[in-house]
Length: 506
Picture 1: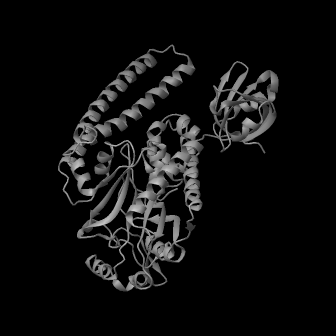
Picture 2: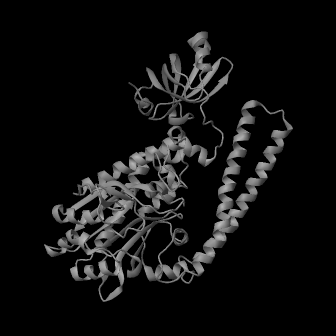
């Protein structure tokens, strides 16, 4: 069976493609069918004189997402999507698609989410899933090439890694249990057995949040390394992110540039060293009290607000102009459809821009009034990363806002050796990690201070009783990484079937 992604191997040959109609244009005696088969897209040109009236009529009558088989000659054509074209000589419609609910016009997000099982077929969603696949593969490849062993942490746990406030609780044969929020504690145990391990699995958070960065069910990658301190941990994080991003760019260049319209120059900034900034300095930068490359957080936001307002005005002028032309009539069908789609696209873009224009003054106010010692929220991360082209690492966090298992900074118990990696362009945190506390007495006090039951952590304390060593690790949110790499605005589009506050269907 020949797939579209392999057409470069069949130029000048006759092949049969099997797939679905993603779009169709008609001309006098001609059909231009955009066929998709899951591996890619290909324009199939049907000439009535070549295939005969019966097949031509059958293909012309096919509708969006009808399944079909088409046979024809493969030709290279850089002007076409994917770079190849099929000149059809035969074929058949396998199954019709009557009243397919998702058209090529703009649809509301809630409607598309309700039709997620069909929305996955669209070009953008197809590209996102291809990027997701590449990211997952390259994550495994990186760790396997570097001597890590993949291990699996349990999804059902009797205790929480960071408290039970935001966990889904269940009845486990008459006793309480939780859906895992992290495999990290188990990762520490496995690292003491295997040296270097990583887990790759689903995790769950019951936060009642509907922001563009939150899912209730998501995938986490959590490496854990024996004999690592936080410096080595940060070195690994930087190497890991740089390697995965560059490999995905290479593997998914078509999806990223042609469909997702991602600025690859911005992504390739991972080739530069990642700035490492202590929390106390990051606070000053956020508050606008410290410049980065001659600019402050406040000046950057003020410039962005002005540019956003200008963009909105330019879009509105184009909308008004095109709507006037449409209302006047006398436009050919093809151009009319293009203009209507363009207007819909501009209106959707202005909706997002208007939301951004409303947010920026709030971000400015929040940044100016940020309290030293507090945790960064989503908007704080957005503001901070706007000053940097590459990802940044914020390290040495206040003890009171971090998990009990993080190691205290020597000589200063008010801070722990934690690190968050924040993606640029406003995408914020994608990695959180730390060196782990090895002093059992410190851990006992931390467990008490956090109000956690000591008895359920006895197995974890055993790791400090029997051959404890310095060790560190981190957690990467898969969907957050994909969101940044793909340049997608909302995390819900980076997982096949998102589960989030208020949504558990389809």
